[in-house]
Image (tube, rainbow, N blue to C red; front, side, top):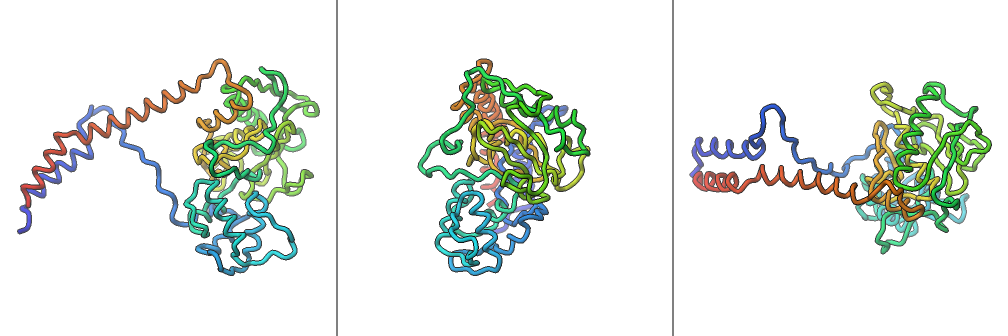
Length: 360
């Protein structure tokens, strides 16, 4: 027998209460925020450099796809595939390339399938840092990674590092003062967690860290590739070289810069400073040291992974405690759980069960 209309209405009412718990009319209780699901379609972000890689969707062991040799070069550049003969790279999806795909997926916290699925290709095509990924042993417990040899600035702690901007290698559409403010903030975020002070200097030649915007081949053996693709690169200690791709549309404020391919300057600055300090790429997607950054996205808050990694090199800033950061995260999580418990109170659940049962 079909349930009566009043039963439907009663059940609907309780469901409505579950979704909208009573609250103060002047301030709505925020809902539970869930992590977004991983993308199931390829997101190329108008990546002109690696746009054609989308033709490799669903390629797997045994596939032969024209142009896959270029993808193998990509995997070689970023540290996942060792190519022995650059003049004889095939378009075959062979066992060595499958192993490289496995390593790539494991490193970047992707579903480990060994295939070029949509998750993997979206990540491959995402704009990213030009520094190769250091693939650590899979059984290692930590996520943060260092460069081979674990280099760091070797001055006595606390230390001061100076930085300067190349007078000949800037971008005209952002004022120098705006660029300087961004970098002051970026250096400050790292300096707040380690006993290192970063000071700007006008003496570019003697600065510890030298910052500039460059296009194409700029003499360091790591040419830039145009819009999107590689966004920037810097070098491990104590090189101090920090290069950004001048072909990008760099943004200080997305409210002002409307380009759909705009890249947040501070997010990239914070990431590259991590390299200058000795951190390699992290496997934690929320970390600033994760290698990719999508257009019009901002990632400027150091994660626990970032902080633990850099503090293992330099120690902690005496004015910073990791516990306070963790307590803040715990308080946020507890507040979320309290809202969930309120919306799913026993009385409402009991009422729903009884009403639904009476409808049968």
